[in-house]
Image 1 (cartoon, rainbow over the protein chains, first blue to last red):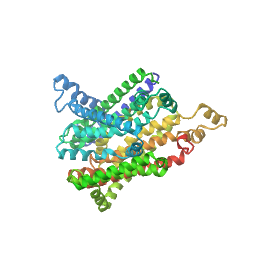
Image 2 (image 1 turned 60 degrees about the vertical axis):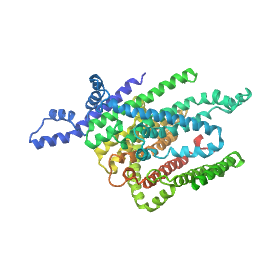
Image 3 (image 1 turned 90 degrees about the vertical axis):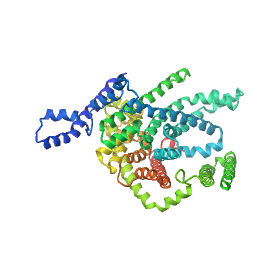
Image 4 (image 1 turned 30 degrees about the vertical axis):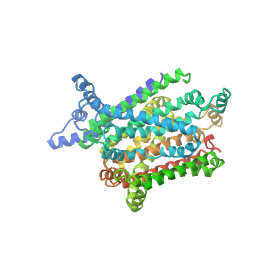
Length: 291
Length: 281
């Protein structure tokens, strides 16, 4: 709790730097406009203009949050929550492919990890590649998957979900293998003295003790899934979702739109990681593992 | 059809060999630990090749590995040009600037517990966000060339590196710090002789995370605009022209570059943190 004041100070400092940055980055445009019009502006006029430009180099936090409100809350009040100009609509597109991909990737990852732990041949063949693949920029294949799947007639949510799944898959495999191997020799021996088979050892010892590892990987995985879905949206047509908003914003110089999409994505990411964190705490508490 | 049958037989044979080796005494030797994954990787390539030929999958959906290898060797000059643009100019300079800045920032805020308590949670929070989304903004600010890619990389690696370094600087025990105190060591002496060496495992953890992030940042930033060279540029252009063999060749380059980069950082880590339990044999 004693961290609250330092955190607030840091956040306040970030916003202060942001405002100052907006002023200095947008100043040039204002001065150019004034020069063209042949007028001179006082400092306060320049300041006011830099805060309210339509296509600023760096929009102020107020502009970004205004845009966020107009494209979410205000749309809901208008009853147009799912219109194409609403960030809720775009957010849902991104969120749905993120979640579908995350679930597929996590389940596949857990299955592979179970196989790796129980089968030595699988462990020796797959595990080095699973670890090596974490050093590879997998995201680079996103455009290819989207376009190839498009050419064989698969469109919409699925290609994006596959990329999201792919990105959450490897962290889960690596984390779960570590987790399923975390029981020590003493615990495994105890299970043996109870005459427990491999199946019972798995359900009653290995799986429960892997939970802390699983949740750590899930947090990494869900953030990676969201990034995967956003990058996949850069090459999907029609342009939609947070990635689509960013790309169309960058085509048309709509900086405020890019920033609001970025912030919305950040909020969604924070919420997703937060939800996994809450589930983690509840589960571990129930299992008597909470630190 | 003959291809499909052939690769199926090959696949079963290779699987059998791997299972035999893994469960024999060989499986615990160094040679066995290298041979099994290599055979597994080769099997995937051969099965891929056989299935693509046997089922006559068009090259615009999935080119066979042989076609990718041919394309790779034919366009070495283009691949090298893209590699220089994206990796050496964009990713590496961004990596150096971002990690260096984060390292210095960590040492600066190390003297202020107030800043640490404030920056660490914020840094942790930001490190989980999709920072790659700043790419369109930074491309607008810094132009299409490598400077904007380096800026994206800086934004991506800064916070993971900062959080790890700050964590590492806390790693010394009170007893060790007291010992330095009894030696009348100044702040800087105890920083350089005790706390920085103790922080190195964490610093390298941050560096290793950053290697992958740097490459991803540099490639994805090119999707938002770049000069007519670079790995991300080539991927998005060739995908549009359905030149998938070239896309796979670029992905191969990216994979090799990523693995080598990570490997080099790991080697340096071994040399620097030879004393750490995880590095002892």
